[in-house]
Length: 67
Image (tube, rainbow, N blue to C red; front, top):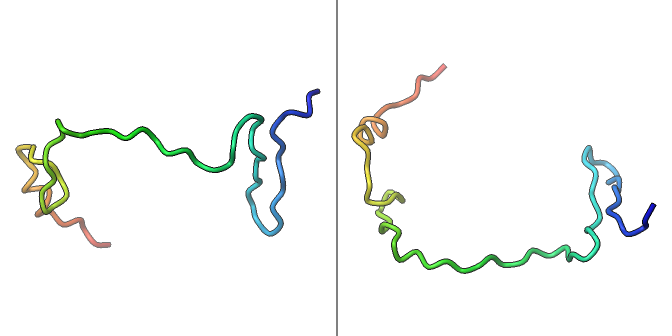
C-alpha cells in the first residue's frame, strides 16, 4: 500500500470523522471563475427575476396549514 493516501482521523467528542487532504491538494478553497451575468434578468425587490409564472401570486398568498 502507498502512504500517499487520505487517512481517516477520529475527532474526539464528535460523531463524524475527518479526512486528511488528498495528495497534491491544499485544504483551503479555491475561488471559482467569475461569471458575467449580462443575460440574466434584473433582480427585483422580492429577490426574483422578472419572469413570473401564471400562479406566482396565488402561491405567494397561500399560507401553509398550522398543526
